[in-house]
Length: 126
Image 1 (tube, rainbow, N blue to C red):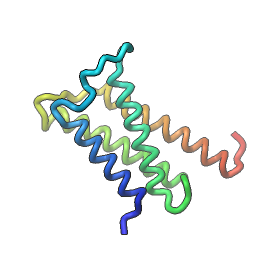
Image 2: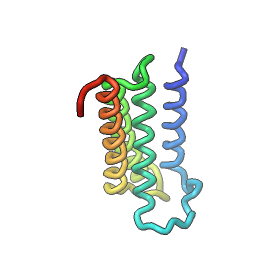
Image 3: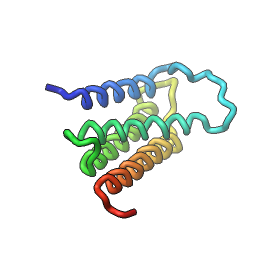
Image 4: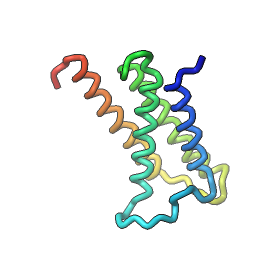
């Protein structure tokens, strides 16, 4: 039986796949008053993917180091793959190295925050 955690992670991954490869993702034309809003979206999307992956692969515990490593690895590879697919499979989207860096930055930030939380939960001084 697939756990609810893994189901949510897969559902979110499919959502990101659709957002990454669709011609006009929802919210793409919203006015946001800051520059590089696209990169902020990438950062947040892959931070969430990392945390969902970590939660899904942490077993019965809330969060484990193994789960964090798994979530980080999956999010980093997925983020790179989405940029490659945007550049090769679509004519309406473009692969950008800066987007990949934003994806990776979000994943690494979530990993670092999760690592800090696991250490604190386990009573290891910072």
